[in-house]
Amino acid sequence: MASLTDYAKNLLARALVGRQPSLPVAAWAALGTGGTDAAGLAGEPAAASGYARQPVAFTGSGAQRNIAPLRFAFTGSVGTLTHVGLYDAVAGGNALAWGTLGTPATLNAAGTITVPAESLTVLAD
Image (tube, rainbow, N blue to C red; front, side, top):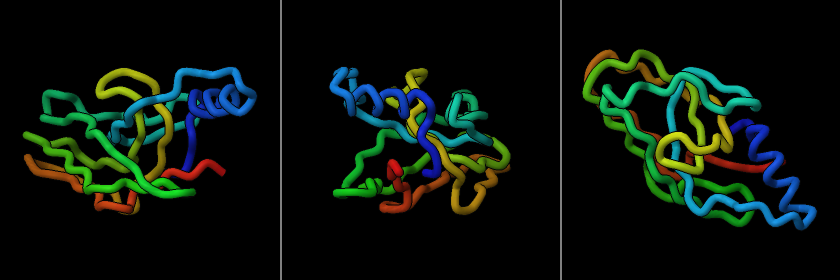
């Protein structure tokens, strides 16, 4: 993932100075059509297309990588998805990070988009 959101940057800054923010206890991956540091991921597909954020667990001592593949299943067309995001909730919640997919994924009918294990990387630098 290329960028932390402004929310995540502020969360980390408070943690670094001992202000004890409430840190996320779980993470969900999402797909979309764009993103910004201010808002995070943009253009998530509608739930009516079968889309749902996927829970993601990470491992690593520096760069964090997803342990297992992430499978997003769709019941219909969603067009081209170009970005991936990370949230602290399965719906709504706070955007934590976002970045571009290595390869855009186009779905013009029902199908699945898979993000392979160890390919979603989070590194604060």
